[in-house]
Length: 265
Image (cartoon, rainbow, N blue to C red; front, side, top):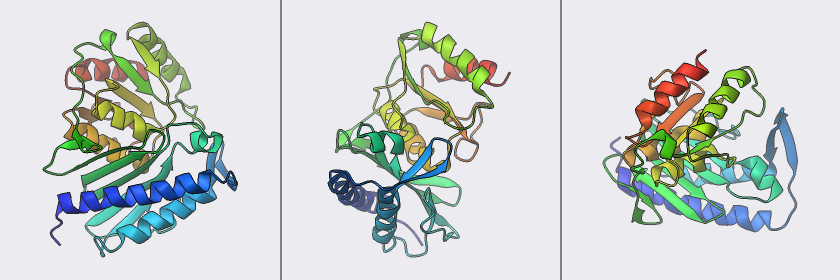
């Protein structure tokens, strides 16, 4: 099946907005049923309900597509097309009533991401792009920053919440960037961090122990907006490898080199 990437992407934007309004309306009722999936890893009934809604709305767009979704409400696998879905990225923020938290939806065609949509619900900003197109935020074209050096950069990261096996080199890396940049930020939503790299608010982002639904749409947006993405080895296994570096074109080599040096020890 030949997919019209632009048309499907714009439909996904509509779906994200509808589900986003559902999440906001339900969150306003202050009746969250919170479950624990693992250490500091939470899920609410709204994560599951919104994921079911997203899948329900996506299913007619590409009927043969499968799903790689965080809450596994549908685990059907497609032969060529799979939707990669995080219904609420930043669940801990969401539980505590603070932004950012976001819906993240990507379409994978064979091994390639071809559509990415992130709706950050705190500021109601929708970031989206499709293969062959530009990257946008609320219909405005976006591009990564032009900051030339790491010491002039604002860098985003995420803290490990259950996997502390690499904590020592990670803390060394944090220490380096704290003293060799304009600042570090930890927002609590990897999807939002990547969207902010795509639109130039952050110059770089790095994190380990991530899942495909955390990064699929955001990594695609960064690439579509002129940035570069890799894993901690400088290779392309950021979707399934659990680690990611995303930067503008200017600082990427410097970021990659320092993270490779410090995190691979």
